[in-house]
Image (cartoon, rainbow, N blue to C red; front, side, top):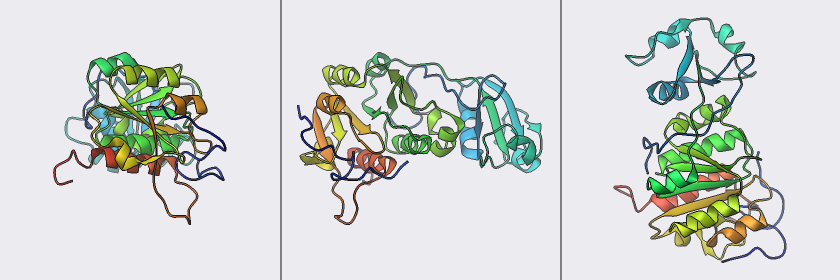
Length: 278
C-alpha cells in the first residue's frame, strides 16, 4: 500500500504552492445525511435556483415546507408541482444568503435522512467518492454534479471538517444532491479500510502517485476515488489507507488543478469505458 514520503504535494499536481481554491444519477440508495443550511430563524434548509428546486420537488424523500416563486418563475414550474407562494424577487432575497442567484425560486425543505457507509456497500453502490476535508461548498457542489454525470452513486465525507449540504452546495450541484447519496464517517482512513475489505479498489489522487489515473481505475469492478483538501491534499494517514495513489498528468506550466476539476477528470476516466459511445 503506497505511503507518502518527503515533501507534501498538492492533491492533484506537483510539490509546491497550495492549489487554487477555494450507480448512475437517479439512483439514491437508502436514506441520506441531514442537509443543514441557511435557516435564519426557520426550520429546514433553503434551496434555490431552477434546477436545484425542481430536483428537490421531484425527490419523493424531500419533505417540503415552503415554496416561494415570482410570477414568472411560477409559470415555469413543471406540471404537478406544489402551488407556490407568489412573492417578489426582493422577498426571496431576504430569506437567502447575500448574493444568492435564485432565478425567482426558493424552497424550504426538511433535511434528508442519513445513510450509513454499510448501507452503500450492502446496496451495491459500485462507484463511490471519498472526500478528505474538502471544505469549499462550491467545490463540493461541483463534485456532486460530476459524480452524478459519471455514474458515481455516493459521496463519503467526514463528520467534522467538511461543510454541511447548504443551499450554496445545492445550487452548485444543479440538483445532484437529490440523486447522489451522502454518508458521513468519523474516520476517513477506517472508512477506506472498510471499503477495501468489501472489495473496492480505493484510489487516492496525489501528485506523487506512480500510476496515472486512467491506469489506476481501469478494470475496477468496485471503485472508490479519494480526493483531498484544496491545498494540502490527502492527509498522510488517508493516503496510506488507499490501495493506490494516482496522479493526473498536467502541463509543467500549471502547478495543480482545482479539486472539483480533478474530480471530474478522475470520474470521467473511471466511466469512459462504461457509457455507450465512450
